Image 1 (cartoon, helix red, strand yellow):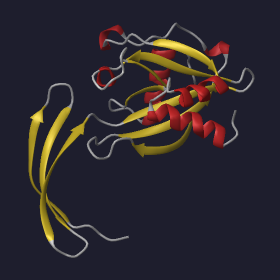
Image 2 (cartoon, helix red, strand yellow):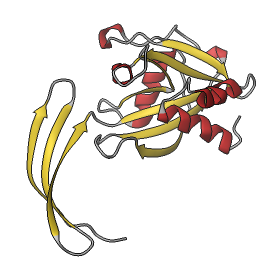
Image 3 (cartoon, helix red, strand yellow):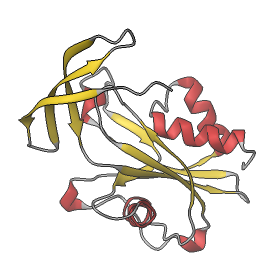
Length: 193
């Protein structure tokens, strides 16, 4: 693998409203050895974690549905998106974060999670690394309704779906969220469900 020589000249904060949008001007050495000045914008929202809960006995998965403004302004007429439970790390380690988010969003209290991988979800513009988890759930683990936190503006619907139906929803376009598609396909590829 070729080492890339990058020298950052200047970083400007364009917005620090919700998260941080930076404009970075840098010099990068190209394959032919020449150096080129470039400018790019990078959105730093922190790192996150995502989990797919599954039940082998009932062959079901737990997903969520909530309004996502960026999808609404990019053609999703309702703005509603079906997703796996996820959240920002907020200075927690990924495992503690996803346990907290699972309880807040779905109402399930889980103790054992399995980390399967990490991925950059939109590396052309977003700095976030997402930590992917799966975990088994049972009805005994349901301790609350879920739905998210009011003070974070969350209004989350919890969905328990047959696994095969969730896979079909990818083909039909009902599930368009990349992290959710990756997790559902992981369960299928690894013959977990």
